[in-house]
Length: 299
Image (cartoon, rainbow, N blue to C red; front, side, top):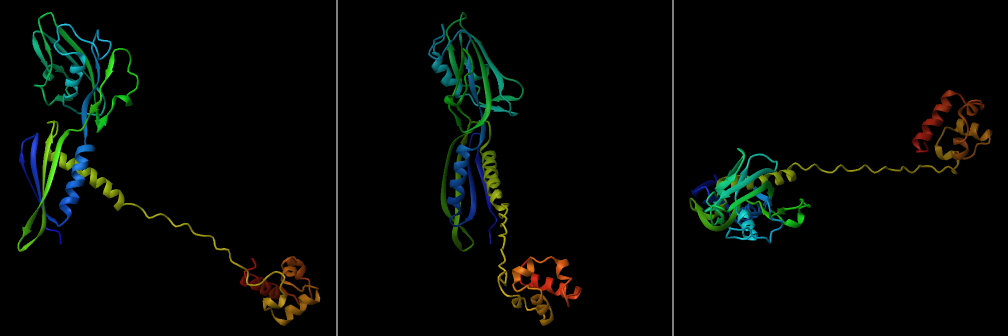
């Protein structure tokens, strides 16, 4: 019998320790390993995927008055954590004038987009003559999307390799726990760190739902229909056999022989109206012949 499982949590919206107990022995490892894999690889998230800086033709450029080169700026933009409501790509922009630290908080977003790490420094602008304008595209995805997978985006548009996963770290451990006098139960402890766009508790629910959806596919799998093999029934009597093999009455057998019909094959090739004209061959005799032919599997 499965004991009542308790789930407890302590921590904040970024990092939490979640305890699941008591579990049947062995299930701590089963659940812990499965949840960790899904948490790190399969949860959807959002990231900046394209960057365009006016006047900058490629990523190996520099911007006058900006401490960081374009490569460093791009690396910092990859660290911006976003939460997008909806499934379509969104356009963002960053506008800053020095002297200042341009941060993720300076990114202008539509109402359906939230920046979860606004204090992230993107670039240092030296003086009031220094301006930084960046056009950004962000979208939702799963896992990691390398630059190589992106199609040509046009002149001046720089693609970014995007890490979409909102989960930064997952560790788990299994300890023994007891229920009453029984000590053969597992206690599963999960340590989860996220980027702030989703809470650790929410990640557990999402991961469990993904696993449940796959398990349900197995539960609801329909058994394949077995194709009925066509059974070829072998006649009980061969066509070259004597008509006596049909076990007809003596009167019918004699009537057929008088007409020169000696084998089953000859009988089968004789039209019904021709047989009905034979001596001593009435409707009842014709019916008996048809029944015997069916009985012997000849039709």
